[in-house]
Length: 273
Image 1 (cartoon, rainbow, N blue to C red):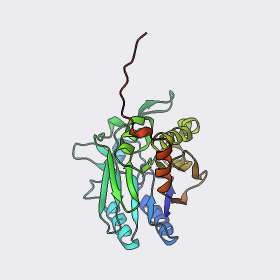
Image 2 (image 1 turned 90 degrees about the vertical axis):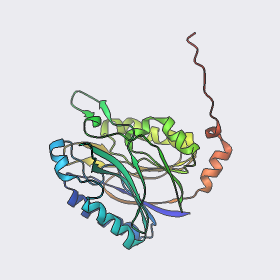
Image 3 (image 1 turned 45 degrees about the horizontal axis):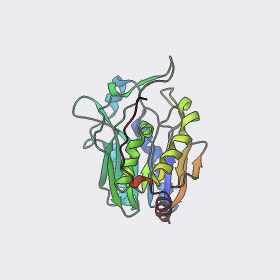
Image 4 (image 1 turned 180 degrees about the vertical axis):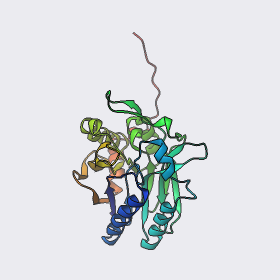
């Protein structure tokens, strides 16, 4: 078994404050013995006003706070999966990017969110991420000492074919860092995450944003870890901070040997009768 930690956050609009909170919790997790720490979507900033957002974010090469996180990973000798880090792109838009960092303080893998959150939950709650962000076009599976990791972000969760492809390409642990809205989270969060675990026979690790944020957005929280049989093995129901858990890849092999559904790649003809 391997000891992991995830961090549940309530990110605001100041990247400097976000870094200080993150540093505290990452250090705490490392000192408790975790070799791998993961964070939610929008770890560095949650700002809905584009005019303010672009004043506070950087390109990957210029981001001083990302550089500090790289140094922290190196000093603590741990892996860090920044669930998503908001960065400037070269095309006058932002990118919502997972950044996986190794214990040498180097970026091991990147994933840009494919499915952007363009939805209307109610007359008062609407989101149009495509106005701000460039979507990714590549799914990512990467090998690590902890197993093969599949990367995804929040709204990706509603597109099961992505998770099937990640699992069929070797992913044993799949990350779903999120800033799920409160309204959708209370009815869909647990069910969707359990379904993705069961369908793929993978561990699902979902660090989440929690509570009412500085920008008045309300997120659901309930960071979850679900085993390949669909059992919730860890859940942070309240507050922000660190949650520890263990991963046993033998459970992945066991689940997939019992129900080898990801091996099937059949296309079906649909009748209109």
